[in-house]
Length: 173
Image 1 (tube, rainbow, N blue to C red):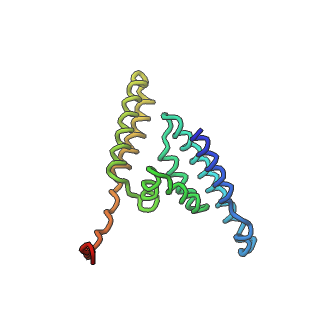
Image 2: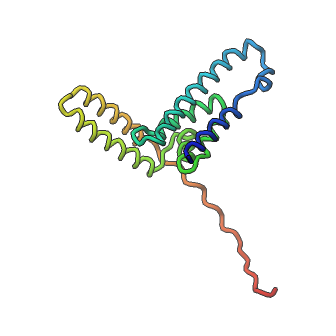
Image 3: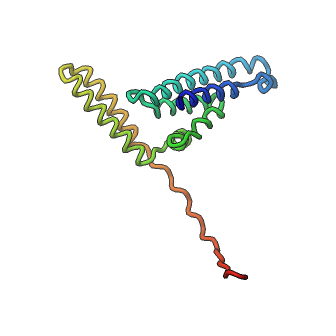
């Protein structure tokens, strides 16, 4: 029931965030047509990727993060409010925002991604042991993904805050 409530909230947010024609009416029609079509193409890609990621929340076999990263990239180009909604998700949102905005991956996220890829490689070897071409193709894609994850830098540390003067008062003053 809690997950159903989450999905209803997502649908309600999507309906509220739809663009209005009044906000786009200030542009000439010739300029609006390609932009409007492009915006909807990005939005459809984002909705599709988000739906696949939402399925991954329920089914442990499907990944969530990569689909939500694609959705955030698409929503940034179509309607940044939808990307902001993904960024606001507890646990996964800040990491997605960091990756989308800077291309950086935190060390814990890197370790989790590489561990998942190692498990996928082990499963691939187990399942395709007698089929060398599918095994090689799958392991090749996993190697490319691992190289990409390893090549990403870690996020920059937050700037240290200068010390503040703390004055203590004696009780009774």
